[in-house]
Length: 471
Image 1 (cartoon, rainbow, N blue to C red):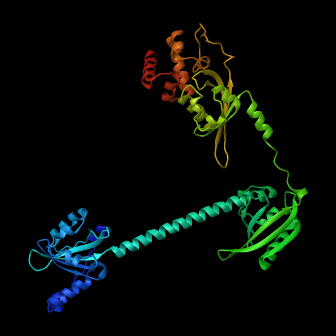
Image 2: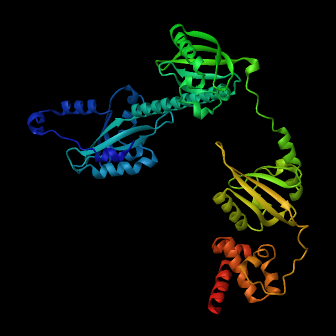
Image 3: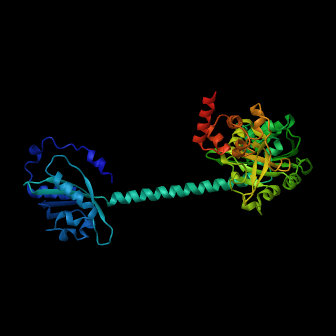
């Protein structure tokens, strides 16, 4: 029970209590109090002097005998004692506040009572009036149970709908649900969409006769009208716009006080659309390619990989790598891979990105990566083609003795050779070109450039300041 609500509740007293109630004797007053309250207590200095209980359900607890002569605060549970003290303190004031306290019961279940207290006669005498909240608790419990039942029913309906959707879309026969008054397609399964040569989304909400040839449209409308009138109908020899011929079987049913017609199109066997080309051969070729192929989610979690990728990473089975992040095996750093994926997201693909591939034991090989973003209705995936180029490169590429004259000449070395080797075999000018090349690759992202170069962010800033001061 929210006590703040009861605290703010304003009561409207009698305007003329002395005029109309002043001649009441003590017996009548006591009877009124006992009838109006579930529990009424007369207290003196916090000690219960007299008790009035309404109904047998409270009298059966023995409170009328056990409470007399006992301190009020001792009749409640420990957590309610502070509320009893507050009620006794507020009794002399004119502001009335209701507070819920709990009385221990013989059955082990506390009895909630909502009390207010007021001074009765002398300064030490207090009248406490209480209302039993067990009926409210029972109603609340019933409300909770009703809500849980509704949740269970709603969950059952969702599960039933999911099973219906799965069954509707998985049946091989073309099935369509139509509104007979408007000839609008409400639902259509995948088999019917293939026969009509369109997608489920494109046909849902469209007019049914748009999927049939001009000669068949009148027969389709007559079939719907007959099913609407008699319950079932069948028409043979109808043609759809894709050239498939077959029979249309219609059955009407009522849904939410509205009539619907469910249609089953039975194509002639020889007229069935040819199945899509099997992709087993394509998948078998991709699996046996010497270049590593891997498919990931947009967050770079691996979905599938071919045998060449497993060979390069020294992982025995594809199951062991599915779900792991691609950056565990590809790229010198996470930032480098982020640069590549950013380019994929911006341009849709990337070609011949130079990086390294790591196996499970930490060995590295130079590779070139081409990647593409493959969007679909269900989810977007990234496809990576990884080619080993270590045989093309010398084991320890040397830097030309003559100074490079442009950033473009140095770009081929940045990322392939560690920065320390470049600095050791060249001049400060080459170091400056390396930093400029890294910034160009990362499109000005200094944090990514620092990670590619193997520097801390502060180290990169220091070099940039040194280069600026030298000019």
